Figure 1 (cartoon, rainbow over the protein chains, first blue to last red):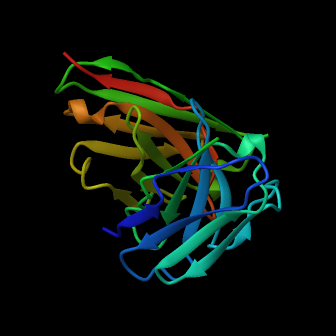
Figure 2: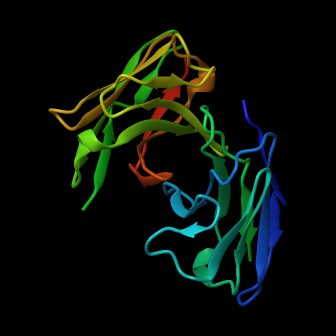
Length: 106
Length: 116
């Protein structure tokens, strides 16, 4: 299975900050990497697909980059609604594994 | 609008069985790959199973292979997960998921608790 490792596991930040979350794959997955946001008690929500494409309706303050084994998601200016847990997920080979999550806290 | 509504979760004893259902609406169900993804309480996400549009291609996570069976009925716009030989570690919220460029729609989830 392809292992996905996110860093950091948790992150404290303030409204208006720029934050970056990293994700590393154990094998080359090209650009087949998605990012999700999950709020407590809710299903995850797709933010970015194919490493850098913003899903419809997602604010432009979110951006993704990377290819191969190293990926990042950046929030340019944190808003109160962005405090949540973020997961990366590879879409190269089944099982389509997720990272362990990064909890973004105030 | 796209809706995915799961049902069938509940409390079951170890070794027991459950069948989850997912009713899809608001899109052409037969055009999309579908999946079940689970999340144990307080834990991360695990992709459990995946089925192609016609059902000809199916994948399972190693943790459920041989115990779970995914299926779909395109005429009824429904996805299913038959879960047998359930274990405590199968306790989780199970999400029905539409697969496109990623999982672009999720159900609200149904809780499966395996406990004696």
